[in-house]
Image (cartoon, rainbow, N blue to C red; front, side, top):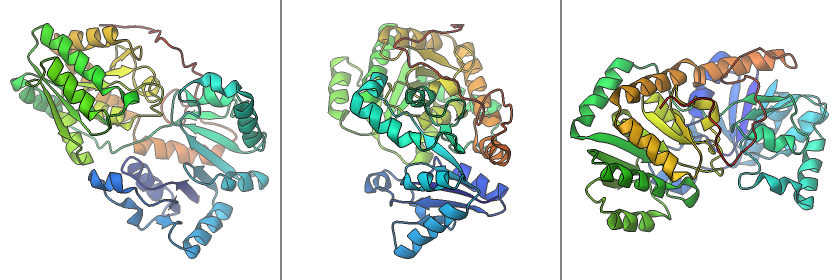
Length: 394
């Protein structure tokens, strides 16, 4: 089976999946990049993975673009990410299988779907695909709902996401490493760009709550961005200079190393976080995660009270209470961290995703009955303002 993946550029979150697809298709997999990697990411320590041998750099030459066009016509299945959508339209006319890899389309307010101009634009764009072999790989738990507002992908959505490296690990050794790191106090971690919708300041308020409760801890916020001056000011105002570290941006390998040392990981993004691959990485690293319900990855990866804790986005009181409860219960932290690691190594990983995707492409329109995880049927999950837990064992 020949599979092509069209997107903006290759990155370390997509690479494990692509390598596995290359293996499963006996080399008949190609990634087509339509943009060079941006300089900001290179400055953060990211490698330029567009140079890999199975990547076609369509932005470099007419010949490379012609190769991409030929692939779009000849491949058995096309995964379409951040790439020109005229490829999907052409394949729909030819009744060729296309899988749209998409996060949410209404990240700020889903009600915007009913604005006349927006509704007409989306309806017109999606109407071409009704009755065609065009499916959604949902890289956000809330994407099926957004598309359903326009009558698109009804009963044609599959759970998907991003699949960072998740090699099998010795979970006992992982937990021993965390215990050793905790000799200097509880280790908490936040990682990402310092943007308002990622809410890094929410982590500082949790740190303030721990300090007031007399907990011995260190919190590290890895990243950089426009919110840095405000964070520095808040650290000083709350007297957290000896508790909170701001080491700046780090290469992915160093971020992973910090996650392996951390006891608790805070994932505070709101609705504008389409997915949030740091959640995959933190769970694989055995962290007890405290995650906002609004981020796209949370409902797919986290089972509240079983492999992490979910709180209502923006509810600082609930977030602080969850962090404090975990800080005071080492056994509970470890149990959640172990379950989180198993979730990634046993289900939400590139190997499982690639295997299931190849099977799905071979059987559509019939679909394998996976109960959960990648390529299972994606439900219509309403983006509610409050999180309604099925259970909370804390």
